[in-house]
Length: 438
Image (tube, rainbow, N blue to C red; front, side):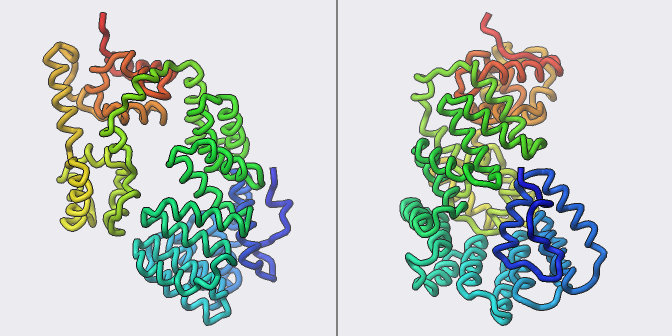
């Protein structure tokens, strides 16, 4: 595994590295937990330095480690220069201060920053802020770089993807790769779009291109593992996760997924039942990011862990309005999205309440503590696979869960015996069990 001690770039040397060198350095830092720890120690050793150059190096280092608010504070103490303003902009963008980020990018031009680089970063910033018209205008200003700059085509494709122009976006990513075959971000987005469009084999090929190069690209490895597992290629999926855990031994998603892969090897899968999956279920799994929302609405939903239409159906109007910064305007946006799909807030809660009442009436939950059975299943602290399967089955409370049989759970794709035993064990701890047909 590549280590920082073997890398020639020193962020704290007298000669400050170029932005390309810093980008490469950042990749090496994030390729393993040990590198992150080593760099964090190096950063801590330089934190007390007060010179403008030290402030720049420490600020960039904090940004590399994702400590963006601290990075902004440090970078503001650095001497004015293109590096200061560009990294200030990038850190501000990470904490959703988009207007300030745009100003800092504009300031960097006064100190010799590359015009194309700044324009593309401004376009990306406007895109993150959901100001798509402004993003499009920035890209139009550098349209002369068409078929010249891979990054131009990548940023244009990202904008098209945000606009829902998925076919054009995929063509743009392919153009970027023709100009720069190792453009990792273009490869990743193209793989991701292929996966969403159902072309799993193409997605696998693109992810394999990413992971074949150093340093370790964790998200690509995990996504590749998911595709391998869905295709029943469990050994390949396991090897991908092993690679992740080798460099990131405490990676929570990989740790959970490793257990899920083992359960998949023994799972029962009712193919006919999966073919009959309803259109409604497909709609409920639609990501919120597929719809146009204001920045305020999008940020509030993200902080509330509402990622799909199904999540909205499990949320009430009162719950949304009780969240800080979520007002009537945002509520109207959300309702409009749901109404277009003939859905409404709290719909799943009403359906589950009715189902629980029916189950209780039939004696399924007879004698059980009402407070316990109304608890959300999230409180059971289940694995990722188990939680996802319960979501697909619209099981949100303990009462819903104990009204379900072993066979109903095992009929859900990717739900295996390991996950079933995990749920049974969790229920037994609170004196409950799944419904039996005996």
